[in-house]
Length: 360
Image (cartoon, rainbow, N blue to C red; front, side, top):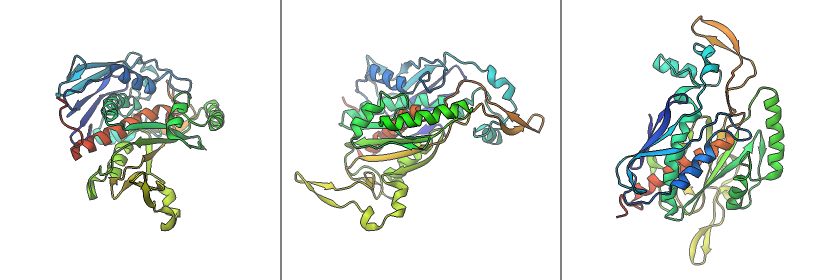
């Protein structure tokens, strides 16, 4: 499946070392003025080349090919392309018939009988550039309704952050090379990351995204639950191996009296006193912050020697993966998780009839 969404549908395409990657967004409302500078900034947040990121030098400039006239959407499919400018497949030539541990090499080969050995092909995190481009449009759409999508690294290398104010945390994280909102935690995480790098290894972490000001009543009962849809969207991101909503797995250790979010009144409006549910009850939004976390595994491309199989010769071999890789993908995964959350909520609001098909 390369298509996501029901009414707001996104198709991503392209391979890591191909000519380009991109996306097609179908069902985006007509008559909406887009902000190209905002799209550029979103792509900047994801692109490689940072302090602890891959040294692959990609500009990641988005070129809009269709569906927009004079910066206004036409209601027709919006096609966006991001050209791959700095491709170097040479380090992968020696791995043409070798399955890299932790990668999708074996499973793609098992499914299709062929795989793109150049940097992982479509299984590479490079594919997520198209998601961020589409997510930028979804964020612009949600901004019209006062909905904010705020993400940051909640944990890296086992070092967690304390969060008091979500919006302040987002602002601090945007100035951090690790996208962490807690400076003391960032210092400790940086030490662990540097140690892993020195050992030819990598680390993982947790991305937290908060969707603020989502109206109550979004989501479909039973099989179309909003939390299920969000989990599906986020689990489809490369390197994500776990998802939780609200207090998540901590709820398993609580009593009902502890986990239930009591309800009261504030300024004449119904207000939940806590948010263990993460803004969703019965699969439907309750008006509180929607909180979702994604567990990101360590980057599988490491220079440390690992055992595997060369399926050309059917011999066991030992490899050290060369090339340009992120020792920790978590900071760059933040805008990707945000993008999928934004697309999910925008699509759910369209299903609910809260976002029109045209603003004309």
